[in-house]
Image (cartoon, rainbow over the protein chains, first blue to last red):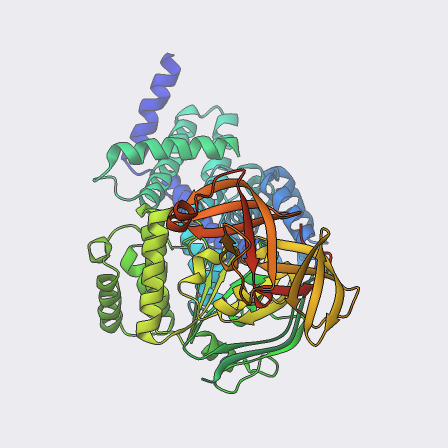
Length: 255
Length: 367
């Protein structure tokens, strides 16, 4: 027990004095997550919408792939991306392996199916006549789709939360394609998760706990903010927002 | 009275099955055309085709601005679509305020903000929904919600309003209320409307013309009185809930007057069908006169000795079930029932004019 307590206190000190190593890793993690989540949304929402609304050749195959993609083990994604990016791989010429770009790529592959899958499920739950109604009132093809997406905005935010949560907590793929590297003594492809693994294996509990606290803090904070956006303001309905937050996470855990 | 929309040779297949086959249908400017038929008869498909939401497998639809379904450019299609609006069976409101719902179509037409607010405000006031403007549309009752969809469509001042069973999901008082709003606004604003319903009672009061669509085929169009009085076929008569639809054969036919054999009883009727034809004869219950004795002569061709098998009071009318060799239903007033002392078991004469019997070829369809 004493060890844990000491580790916790040391960790808070590290955070309190803004240890440059810890700050760098934190910023890098946020950077990777922001880009990968945004890219995952830009690809996943249109893909999920198309799969939900249109019928075309190959749709069933794509739906299967997206559904399978929602449950992909990060280690397998890491392995695939690694096989593509390695020097002799099909994308070896890019020289992305062991760079931040490789991590972003792997995280997009992880997040995109999650976002696409939840978007698809959400849109399929909307009465198809609603889109017909929108078109009948003069909305175009794109306009009626946007109306439909707006109708499901709560689920879309859940999709983004799920994508973001999947990325920030993931360690296998980032480790495999990023390499958890220091370059010139500075963290280069080291994320909060990969760094935590390393610090634990080095027996450096204080740092590991500090990184863990930050990781948890960021996750809770960002999910909280997104939940507020989703459920209305915290100030006017604190109890409802809190209740919804917990039920949302239960649902994600179940998924 | 010119046709706003003309449908010609329209056929639509769904997964290889023919769901719609309309030789010709005109929607006349300014009318309310009611398309009635049982569920699954292709009525909604017809509406979706008119609303350009679905393309028919074959056939042509010509619209008011000279445009035809085939050979319409994308921009023309969109422009034409914007002169129509459709209301569905379920009130399909968007998850926004009532006002934002009413403004939806105006926004799609890029009407500026202030004008949108003004038009939506006027429409809500007209529907007595001003107090609801800022409410979340999802919290409305079914009747209120459907009123909002009516406002959302009418605020666009469409040339053609398409209604797909707009009352079907509502309770009786809301139905009455909404029907009054629909017919009132459509007439006031001079909008042409196509009103689809599986229940002809719902549209009788407000329809100018009736089109009967059964199993995807348009069987008859005409003023409601015509269609009810002289249905084109036994199938139409069955759908319209006709009583006294009797099966028989033509025993002889001369100069447009025929003698029919209905369950061994002879009936004289106007008919052009050749001898031996199987027919269905429709006798409206209010065209049957009941006489206490057969002595009362006149020009009435058919006098059937009948026994009163049962009676039921329908408001001011009494439905008398007769047995005259075949079951026959007559409607008489309560006053004349009392005057004549008609009771179950009594013997009466049912008098039916030859012109009151509508004879149709037997198609062997229907229940």
